[in-house]
Length: 324
Picture 1 (spheres, rainbow, N blue to C red):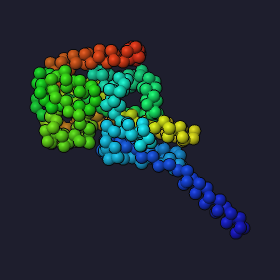
Picture 2: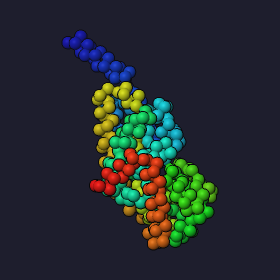
Picture 3: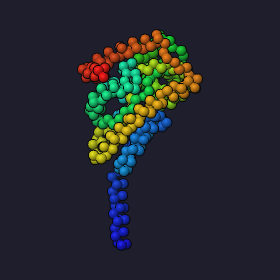
Picture 4: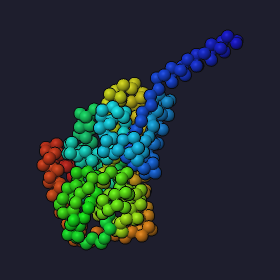
């Protein structure tokens, strides 16, 4: 009996050692604070993968640009410096116009519309990422984007000359059209940029405003509902291909859960973010009719420009979106 028990114990130890030897630790850089719902959702995704693979793949989340700055995350995953990461995909629209699909101003201004637009373009976006050695796992939208300023704005003319934080091609183009001065600033640097006057205005969600406590520097938020950009989680293709079928399935299944959970969270938090801005002294208001008209005009211009750059592929996506 003792011999049998000893043999069983030795076998168990051997299996444990084999599992430990085959285990992989994947660092996952994320650009936003640990308290942001995207990061919290990413952490739950990581825990799901670790659990589903019985520890064979342990994903460790690094929030707030602590491992790689936001604008470096995508390249880090492409080149294998990080196995997996999250990035605001529209920040890379200069590489491929499809990456800016979710940030065409005033094309899809609600969660439902955003989902339809993303569904119309997702296959092409996955293919574009695959061409860059990336495997798409899931995406989660931000709440509708609003305009933050340090003074009252009644028309686009009031924006001229303002130093405007740009985080993707769409925001940089809006700055150009309105005569503002675009300044490239990542989310982790936003509070300092506002406090030091490097930036005086920006377009983003209520979530970013709360994360950065923008009421310490700015006074107004206009709920223009410009678009709903998405953060995308992707895996280095070589790393993904190196997993067995069970490991790949775990990542995709946990990703599907994270996509649903993340969007549900975004919807539930949207109104609360605006309430928090108001409670901290900011004027939260709808845009004036003139400002709305001016911004929608920029949206029409930018839609035309996007269609021109995206060609037949982009035209087919927009047609499919409008047909639903």
